Length: 423
Image (cartoon, rainbow, N blue to C red; front, side, top):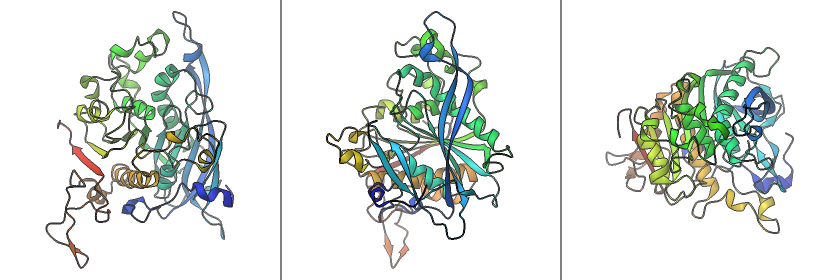
């Protein structure tokens, strides 16, 4: 990443609005970024496996973007650009952020917790770029995946995504763990993979729920949209080997509009298998993943885990996750692809800022053990009903407004909490 050209200024992914909650601001660490290719040499090849035939095997290649705390050279300043293929694959957008390409890693603070970001279908590793940079600036190593067969420019049959998504997430954790002990890698000693969080959006959330312990229901195994020969049984609750294949290094999940509940991928019994703390985020007008019978139903059924549900009132499927629609799409002849990034009600930057605030609090608490973050999480359930009562800068006894939020700025949100055993 070099200095940001003027034509990239319109696509800043690091904008913090004046009304953003406190933890949305970037942290104290400078940020480096690098692109890696990871190859799994023994993956089932869903697209080339024929019904009734032996499972084809192939090398599955995943491109990932890695953000990490860095030490900039003397005179070097934050800032650079990304060139990202968009939802309209014929358009590449120039995005401006704060990370510096190939910056030296900061090895003075010990190993940082690992966070994996998993996009939707379709998407790519840049879709949640605002979160990747933001968390890296706060002392996390963040890796965002280009899921093969599921990106804007290589989108293939949905069956591949259904099968591969949980495996991709676990493979990337294992690969990053290996690089953390590789003397030839810039990540040597940089990350603590035993302390991992996963952020999953839409189909990324579908894979995440499975990796948290929510095995898929047997009823979806023969589905016409699924992989051949019921390969999805590998991820099913009924598979005696399913739970043994989960990664115990995952300590927290952040599931944004996880897809699949309305399509029967989980029963309440399946979701009771989740024991890992999870933060769910959704818009209550989501028509893709569903809300009452979708994301909220997952949240309520995961009874053996501690969990939160942040609801953006009147928001759709794009709540929180995508960076703002690129200017290159808006300036195109048709504007094709713009709705992939936007919400009819909410401003993207506002949504991003709020999500980054809560992701910061959640992962800092669960992956770093900072209990002061609970102040930002255990709040009045409905921001519109919370009371802002401050005189001369000092809250009085009636004050129960959301910490970090300006007066009136929490009215569009609900943040509910259920502890293990609660329904």
